[in-house]
Length: 424
Image (cartoon, rainbow, N blue to C red; front, side, top):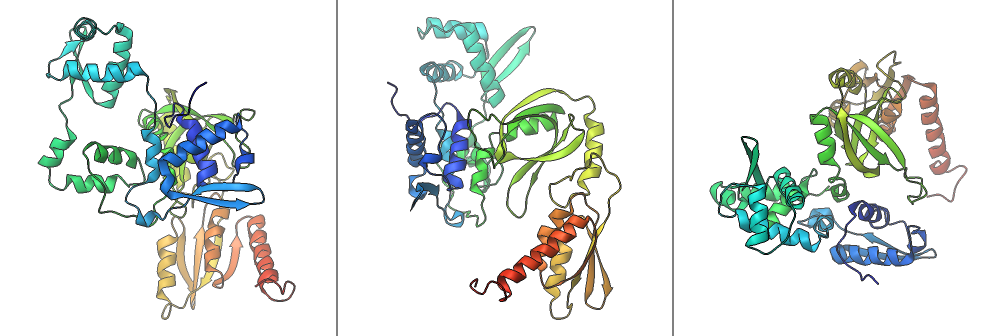
């Protein structure tokens, strides 16, 4: 019987589990429907071994829920980075790694055949050329090993770049690394370099640090490569309302990636992309994406990108609405009451947060925001933060205005003191 191990082979499974049970913290053991209860126990123990100091346990009638409880502004390191340091390797992987490093440590360039012969003859380790070739190719992609073609033959040598040498040579580089280790995007790279050099972040603490998004960093390299190389990419997406189990494998998507967008309100990250199957742009949440794969080169990438640039100028957030391309859009106008003399900060906020909209003075203490966007619902979520200052709403879809009125009426019923006296 296989024993429990803290190491993992399939990061996607662990990523899903950490997100559903430990980040959202709303599921209990009985909600776990993937394989057996023993699998739940193994996954729970594995995550607890990584981030045990930040665990919280809440008991309810449904059972015990386990979640991560951490104030990101008081920790020097994202605890979820530990998930990336738990990958398992075979004995051959470990052995071959150190042997290749030893063969190339003298700085000489060698062919694949030379390296294989040395491994077999001097180290008495039997590796076929294909196994050694695959490992060398992997390390070339990582930048650990350099490859140079001489005639028709590839020669391999160990990269001379050393992080510790750069830290000694360039003053302040260690502080830069400490900052980068907690940056939102791919901070795991900076954290890995710090650990390799025996350093710790003792300078930078980020108050609003969305630590969960480090679980999405594993997707970013393939997405960014797809954008840079102008390729199609494919991935699966899962709905937050559906149970993620083997009977619901999610939806397969093939898209042309355009840009990674980050919400300034929630910190969520989205992939903005064109979907050829339905001839429209859309945004996909990275935390609901799995297993990104690059596809063929998109011959019309520049044409699609030009359309995207026109479309994104009419997005208040990440939603492209239901239109396929730019076209007739009914502008929405929202008029706010602002006393410029006593409340200049309100006007400053409107100017700062209006994004792609226009703001103009239309009367005494009245300012009108004109929103010519695809999805006016995104405008209304923001506009509701100015409740008490909204004078009127014009244009846009009837359903958007009606929803706003019904929300206000519902709030009045709840807090107006007439129908629901018991609600405080």
